[in-house]
Image (tube, rainbow, N blue to C red; front, side, top):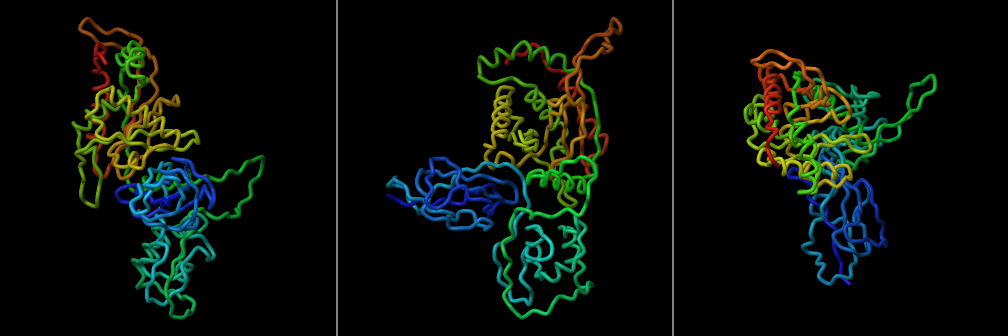
Amino acid sequence: MAQFELIMPKMGESITEATILKWLKREGDTVALDEAVLEIATDKVDSEVPSPVAGVIQKLLYKEGDIVPVGKAVAVLQTEVGNAATSTPKAPAVTKTETIASPAKAEVKTATATTQISNNGNRFYSPLVLNIARQEGISMAELESMSGTGNDGRVTKKDILSFVQNRGNVQTQPKQVEQQTTIIEQPKIETPNVVSTKSYSGNVEIVEMDRMRRLIADNMIKSKQTSAHVTSFVEADVTNIVLWRNRLKKKFTDLYGENLTYTPIFIEAVCKALRDFPIVNSSLDGNNIIIKKDINVGMATALPTGNLIVPVIRNADTLNIIGLAKKVNDLGNRARRNKLKPDEIEGGTYTVSNVGTFGNVMGTPVILQPQVAILATGAIKKKPVVIESKEGDTIGIRHMMFLSHSYDHRIIDGAVGGSFVRRVADYLEAFDGNRDI
């Protein structure tokens, strides 16, 4: 018999800690190899942590809601493997499912006179707000005195930062408390049940948003508040692509065991256009435009729950159609099964969303921060189109598709944003229908 320490895994370059959301196993439970033991959350993702060994849970070292640094042991397993050393255990892989706010530190000791900061007050505070309160030495009394602009008067990040900025001019009257060590209790990630004060007439069903939907909503609002969204539209003739795919999709499946969809073809054209317009492959940091040399294309993927996740194809411009098809299929399939690896939804520099999958002819996608642009590809429809030639104009049936390009007008003007999406369309229309796979 041997002991094995299950380690809090590293889930990204910037991640230093994670919150334990739920233990899936209890002390005394048997765990199979690669079986999920607990669910965790970071400031980027929710994840499941599987066990890299088979054994029995001997001891759980943390409770649900605790924040644990990356690299720390969270549980001790008893195994039959004699070489399961506890000194250098291998950190397990995790699976990302969503984006969440950064939790506060579990405990911080200072020498300020303040009250205990926690979510035990008269209203709920997000982990991010509590974290800022801890860093700035804001007491619970001061928190309770703040006016919140969020839903149901909740204090938002903007509210507390404004309070910090104007703190010298704001007079609060906190309750008298004795000098003591400040302890910030670990806030529970789950939003507490709140009784709605609104009444609804008629035959209605009230469904509370799940965790991922709430966070998607927060991110979409943040993006709209951050970027000056503008959308340009073009229509592309993709007849050559449709005929080429119809002719070679069976051969492609026979050779590579993969389905040939339109998405890798769209991504190939986007990569070419990004090389032509490098400012579109950038982000904004204050007054500095950060132009990315790597082209990492995110592909928005709908999940069975109706939520959305964006896995990233790194260095997509270096892959051919075969490589892109394999990546698109692999990431899409694993995204829908919640099997993505942590770094597979990080580092995107530009995003493509295929709204045509849902039968939509066009859309106005919201930019995924901190990127500065996103492309939506619409449904391919047969239309009568005027075909120009040296012999004269004719009308023919063509396969047409709308492209919708949303971009941040703070750094991308209409000339560049519109020219970029026109260039993508040009590459699609110039697709060689005689090329081989």
